[in-house]
Image (tube, rainbow, N blue to C red; front, side):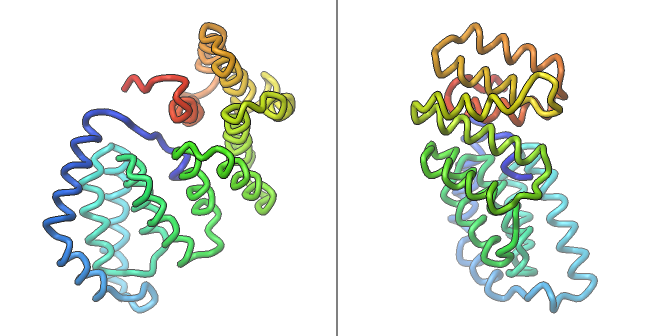
Length: 244
């Protein structure tokens, strides 16, 4: 899940963004030409499908490793093969999200949804764009609609979305609504909403020591990758700094 991945603010990312801009500027005409010549996924021969999957798999690994400019080069190569494959544009959106180019990311996710209107995680990704852009009222409404329209979501996903809604409430100074969400969770849950929700509320109240106590407790219970997913939302909310 793309939008369940980490968003980095390091100097390395700034350099990657500059490199990406220069790459796109220098190769813009060729890129447009190759995309226009790309085929429909249904018409691809087996060899072309294998090449496409290899490119996207390699690009996904590069995105995860925060080698985003290299990932985008492979994604552009993939676009030269096919221009109607939703996973390609979801991955492209993930890459742009990594370098915090949210407008490009949103455009890519919209393209993915156009190609696959039933794409559940694409819809999540588009709502996540509102969240990272700090458009909290819109993000709240979007996430609520997402939950309503997808009642069969895994608990891990639905709980994460509700946690993000809790943060949206806090960012709109609606503490009571945030507490109503938090009251549905406790310390025995398999998901860390109870701990991170309490931390968010304490950060909102400017009680940083209490908030950090909740984070320390969560780190002792849940796996690092799970903690990082929830921690990232606190980073996006400007309550904690990204130390990486």
